[in-house]
Length: 314
Image 1: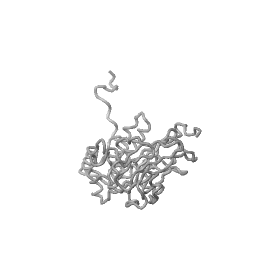
Image 2: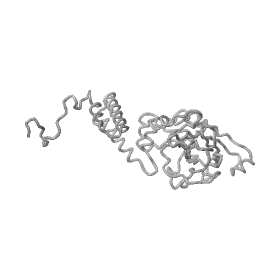
Image 3: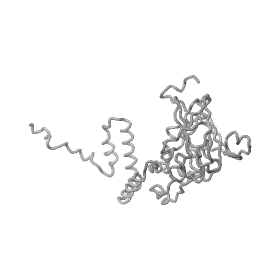
Image 4: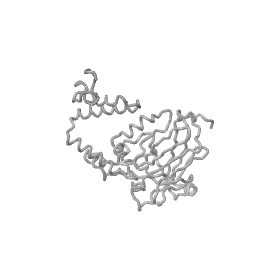
């Protein structure tokens, strides 16, 4: 072996001192470790994440005790997750990250229905129901007739669109929060719009409610003197072949916390009045007691340009 040849048994050569980790070059050194990542998008995301994380640590001069507390908090957040509860989604929601991702990926314009967060309670599949069905299986709450339609941006109806809905009850709880108290799958429904894109179902007027406060996210809100409340709303997830699925809410106008939603989900275009209808004949036709409340929600979907199928003939 030549005196100048490297000895394989000695292992890789040490990087020059200019490439070693230091306070000043920490982000550069760690980001460089991802330079060979085969997926360019993953390389971009990890490099940016490292740079922002290191900038944050330096900006606040994070202590070892604080970093340990952060790790403990994230560990507890994961441990709080169950098959019917997603504490990490809740954390993302209260930090505004969920809404920012939704907004960046679903920029609406031209009358398209705006999206908002899915929330942590879409953890079970909604039962298929016929149009006009009552999703309030326990019969509690102020009865409400929900009507609406699904169309494309050109105004053409989207026949047979899938409309998935779920909501809290009149006390502000979802069914998965009250097993044995509420019927299973209470206030959930999966509907298929008719040939004209229309849908309708019976429900109750939802109530505002606090997000779960018995876990790490609740303790974070308490420590930062933030309230945990969400305004009253009905969740919608509307989909159809050839169109992008929209996940959104229908908010009750005038509900408490409409201007200070704990998860930042309110958009003005999604707020609706729920007027009272006092009409015995209309109530009988709808299968509801008189008087009742009503609301209409017309959904406009974005064509899915990736599939190229949204331009099919109506």
